[in-house]
Amino acid sequence: MGCLDHPRQGVPNVRTVAVMNEKGGSGKTTTTISLAAVLAERGFRILVVDLDPQASASLWLGRGREPGLYRAIAEKRDLEPFVRATAVAGLDIIAGSRELAAVDDLRGRIGIQTALKRALARLHVRWDIVLIDCPPNLGLLSVNALAAADEVVGRQNLGRRRSPINSGQGGRVEMRRHAGRVTWHTEMHRTDP
Image (tube, rainbow, N blue to C red):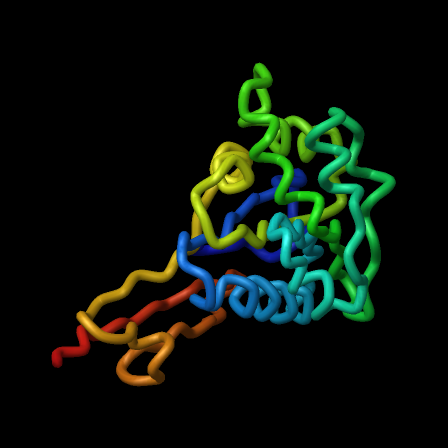
């Protein structure tokens, strides 16, 4: 994600970040929730959009599954009524649900690929960062996340076996603070057989 100015300095500029990988169990939800919590703790206002039908991010943040996000995408509704506060100050969520799996059935609709982008654009600006937790596939939900996102965070498998992030060997992601800015520094090392 690079560098972030400290929140609420100047004109509001919402950054939308999709956390994605086509493989399940690759740490997308863990990354989304961890980033959201750390950034909220540092004073950023965060909105998590749980675009995964498993709705694990929603469950982690104590909200449960709610069908509102599906309705907003499928029926072109506003997202505002579906924004929920969490127990973490400065961290809100739009919960996911199993109904999101039916979004792929809408594939023939004109403009469905950008429905999430349009719905997010209609929200009142009150967050610094929107984090989208994506499903483990490259279907229509992931296409919507890519269309809505300014940036994408994804995991890469650097070796033939397990990636250093999953194995705990040679991979590290750090947050650093420099003159009021938050930066991410990532180190990954190839794991040879």
